[in-house]
Image (cartoon, rainbow, N blue to C red; front, side, top):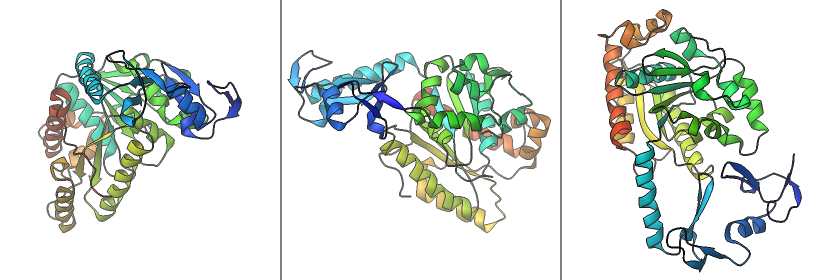
Length: 357
């Protein structure tokens, strides 16, 4: 697909990530690094500070910030710090929804069960929650007994509003369902500029009516999951208490690190959630010890093996509805309490760096 350079107006084919960026809701193209520099700095490198209005020449990396579709220039470190303080105040006023991806490359770790019960628990706690099924198998809808007339496909491909497509299922809880058409949506994403940011583009302002967005990701290395990770601001990783699942955590850490470094999106590791815990098994006890040693405060209390958790989907109910006094309900309430502390009080459990993969 041919594009036109915003600087020199030369026709070219986009081959590298730096050649296309989103600014003010539109895509801007540059054919070379020289044109990129000219676009960002101007032909003479002279810019105007966004804070104090002073004209200056860019000399250091901290003087230019590019993110969330806009550029900012700072003549000094003091002006940059003032901008960061101002943005923090704006974020508090705007109260953008907390976006949590429930993600693991490995299947069978309890991702869908966790996504459904976390979303339902947050809704019970008084938050308005949107649960997004980003897995083409459609297990979220099947577990809750719903099938939307329109799905995540229509939001990503046709630009439908998420609030119009989402299905209300409980008080405070709406679900954006998916089905096999999500595979076609992924083909659509593959042909788009900034293909890993389409979900963020489509859902950004459209989800402002919700307090929290929970995304149930597919067990795969896929473009759809890249979109989910770039849209999310934090990740919960369910990990089954077995050896292979522990090995899979390393891949998850690498993915989060790649999203930060290559896709330039600061997604946080909210925590790892041990699932299918059986205190009678040595491997379960060893798995918990390993996760708590490796992740310290970011390892949640485990979800114990519980028959009621497996039965709840057949009744089209959450664990809180199906068996509110079961061990499964008790364990997920603890998780909801931990996450609620983050989404309501702005607490974070992420250190400056991720554990080594």
